[in-house]
Each structure stands twice: as C-alpha cells, then as structure tokens.
Length: 380
Image 1 (cartoon, rainbow, N blue to C red):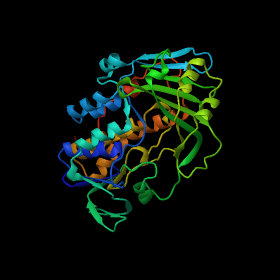
Image 2: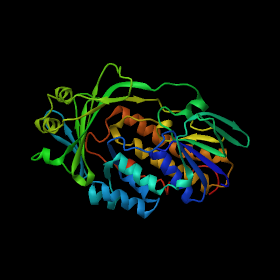
Image 3: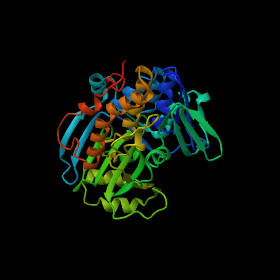
Image 4: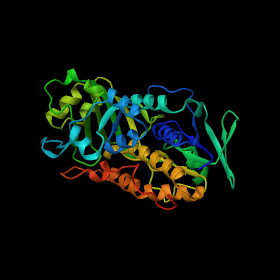
C-alpha cells in the first residue's frame, strides 16, 4: 500500500504495529498521548504465539526480550484446597520445539523498552492526545488536544479499552465492571524458599471461576509474580488501580492450600485493580479506520492472552495492508475477517475461565502463527 498509516496509541499493540509496518516499507506514525514513556505495570506473560509474532520483527528484538525474561518450565493447574494437580503442560524447551518460540515472562516495562528501541524514532510522536477523527473519501484527519492535526490514509486505533478512536467511529460505550478485582505483587524468590514449582506458571483454581491465584517467574527467575483475583460487588476508587492491602489479600485466600498461602505470606506490597470488559464487537473497521487489541476486544486475564492478541492483531494488520492488492477498505476487512473469530473465542473463553483447568492441549492458542495465517479476501 502506498500511503501513510497513523497508529493511535503507543502501547504494546501500537508499537508492534508501527514496527511491523515500518519493516514492510510503509510510511507510519505512532501517536502516543503520554509525554514520555515511563516504567509502568508489572508483569507480561508472552505465550509462544506472542513470542513467535515478535520474533518475526527481527532477531535483535527477540534476543533483547530473552535476556530479561524468565522461561517457565511448565503450565500447571492446581486445586485451591487440596493442591491436586489437574493439568501439567511442558513449556520451556519443549514449547519452543513444538511451537517455534518459547513462553517468556518478564516485566511489562522491559517489553515496552525493547519495542521503543526498535520503532523508528522519526515515526513516534509523544504528547499527542487524540480528540477527534474526520474520515472522507481520500483519507482521515486526526485532531489532537494541542490543536495540531495530522492526515493519514489509514488510522489504527491501538489506544486501549478507553479508545478515543473507537469512540469516534462507534460512539460512546462504557466498559463494564466485571465484579472481579485483581491483586498484583512481585516477591524476590529468596523469600519463597522451600515452596515447589517456582520456575513454573502455576494457576490455583479457586472455589468459583472468579477466584484464583497465578504465579510465574520474572526477571530471569529472580522474582516471582503473584496475580490473584476475587469477586467484589463494586469499585469505588477513582482509578482502576490503587495500592492494596497485603493483609486483605491474605485474608481473602485464608482457606487455600498451605503452599498457596505461603506465596501470599511473602507479599509486603500489592496493587489492587478493577477488571473491566466489553462484549465482542461485530465489526472493528470503517473504510479507512480500524482497531486492534483492547480497543476492540478487551479481555479478562484468565487465559493470559490480552497482550498476545494485540500483538497478533498488529502483525496480521500489517500483512493485510502490505501484502494484499486491494482497496484499503478490503484490506481492513481482510484483517478483521482473519482475526475476529479467534479473538472473540478467546475473549469469551477468558470470561468463562475454564481453559486448561483440566488436562488438555494448548495448541489452538499457542500454535497460532500470525506471520503465516492465510489472509482472507483481497489478492496476495
């Protein structure tokens, strides 16, 4: 495609889209509302499908992630009270051999830093908060809070669950509080001496679908990330994330197996967040505007696929825009056709929270190759 692409949002999906499009020779600009990138967030779980997509962006990027990441040995499911194992999948080298790339767990900021170093700096504009879009037959005009404007042939909304692009093309719709809150903590591994499976991704399944504890290694295995969810009737904080209370966390899981409680006993600082979702959208695109990631399919975290699906979206979108010989609207339709069923299935499955509770295969999620999946519509 000969024309300019504007990506709104400089998070994981937006940066991957910018890099993929630039590598394909496209003229691309990434507009991020933050005035500078900051070290925010805690964990990121990149399952093999996500790592395989990132690996296609260049060996240097993949190598950078591997230097700071841990590689979980297994994916284990355990029952909250008895500790019984109900599922164990080999990951590590076995996953790499099976799927072509490993599972990597790392600090979210390390992933963003690695992406920021690769995206062409001339294509990145910080402090650009989108306020409005105007689409016409020849392109799209973007208007920003500082009064500036930009023009593009295609606009990609990668600006999260509060997407300004989504609002501009589909109207106002508020995300729904799920009635579930999440606790996040990072604990040095030496505080957990004697507990088993610290090198694995372990999920403790609670007495209801909303209650669980997930742990996995971070920072080359030096730390353990703890992610716990529980039902809560309402959320009254101004922010979706606020400082939590470690004693509240321990009290909520007081009936869990001693090994699960041992993980929580080591926590001294915790963040508490509200979990919000939207129902799957029937369409993501207009003739020249489309969405990716949380802007169109925000997910519960129970399948650990939120970031992975945004990364897959970005790769497939870049391929549709560069590999197909068709009008722009048809290329965007092809992208949507390839991605909609898969992301909707994962979005709904994440809300149901039953995936791999019992022994089974992760192949349909982990084995997906965004670089090789056929593009529907258009002419390759």
